[in-house]
Amino acid sequence: MLKIYGSIRTRTFRAIWTAEELGIPYEHIPIDPKTGESRTPEFLNKNPYGKVPVIEDDGFVLFESSAICTYLADKFPEKHLSPKPYTKERALYNQWVSFVTTELEQGLWTMAKNTFALPEAKRVPQMREQGKREFAEATKALNIGLKDRNFLVGERFSVADIIAGNCLIWAVRSDVPLGYPR
Ligand SMILES: N[C@@H](CCC(=O)N[C@@H](CS)C(=O)NCC(=O)O)C(=O)O
Image 1 (cartoon, helix red, strand yellow):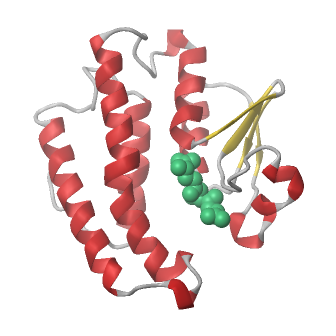
Image 2 (tube, rainbow, N blue to C red):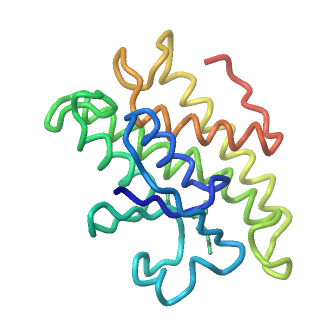
């Protein structure tokens, strides 16, 4: 059975959300990075970077949340959670997944690192404002990208919406204003 490693209050949420949308059985192993569980030799064997989420699917190990969600969605094409490869929809899907993970998320991550995630001595408080500004710029672009549509790609809910949705939930939970209607 598919195994999903990582506590729910981490980016592992994306993998679990995807598995739930697909309606597939999985075992959740709530490895908590805060306790050092993701840095044991056994876990580093699965992800040498020591982070969650990680999945194991019949012995196949994969890390990076967007790769995991896309792999799961592609495995069940009849559920339409990712567009078919080699299509324009797929290119737009790749665009939004990259945008969310390399742009939208980074502002939030900068804020989190300099508020609680890094050891206190390594935090730079001024970087919190920088992160907030970057997140605001990225949400502006996301708002324009959604225009009058409900989903990031075409007329269908996809993993791109799951990853973007997870980032926006993360922002709301951190009291960071979203600022735009879409
Ligand atoms: N780009 C990675 C980021 C993974 C990541 O940073 N995970 C955090 C939890 S949300 C983690 O495991 N942090 C532990 C650490 O930094 O030691 C992904 O999307 O999977």
